[in-house]
Amino acid sequence: MLNDTNHSNTSSGALLVLSRVSARFVDDKKSVYVLKDITFSVPAGAFVSIIGPSGAGKSTLMRIILGFMPHESGTIVRNFKRPAMVFQNYALFPWLSAIDNVAFGLKMAGVPKAEREHLAREKLKEVGLAHLENHYPAALSGGQRQRVGLARALAISPDLLIMDEPFSNLDTITSEALKQDLLEIWRQYGITILMVNHLIPDAIELSDEIIVMGTHPGHIEKTLTVDLPRPRDTRDARFFKQVDALIEVVRTVS
Image 1 (cartoon, rainbow, N blue to C red):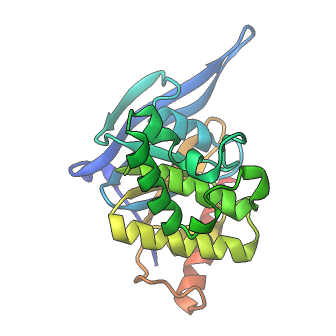
Image 2: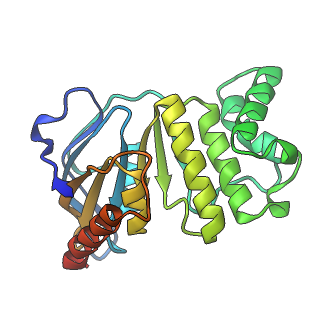
């Protein structure tokens, strides 16, 4: 069953700790809180999903964690050194080939050309795109673009991988294949993954913990642990029971 998680005593050994983090948007006319008193921790090596209705500030929270935008109050302890992000809309450079997109972060870090191309080819191979290294994004399907985005993130050997609704623009078959690849990469490298998701079955299938957010302003309603054994059988009655339980939790905050 899904169990409530109390994070008050789980910050030791955590890769990320947020304590009473709040943020707001300010314009000429008004100031509006978008996040209020966000508190949770992400254990090193865990797979954690954040779900909730539109307007809960999930993507804003990811940007704050990465330092892309400031927070107004509260504390964030970042025990990671090499974060990477996979975006919902792929965020590839259309003028760069697949291999050059994957190597871009390495290039910015000053990695020599021969080394970064070698690493980029390795990561493209891991996501099943070695044969498309010279293709440009316009010539790739949505699933292939997302795999290039994943390969680009993995190329820098991240200790925290943040994914913002990575499956939402993909068809079911492509999404299922990418989920399995992602789980294999997670197991192989022990990366900590924090994923924004709106698909409840995916959250149950992939996650160790699920953070449920509410709106007006964005806040945490519940943090739940998933106690199903891995690999997870999505046709098992216990899986459907947990999906139904999470739907009821989300329904109360929508």
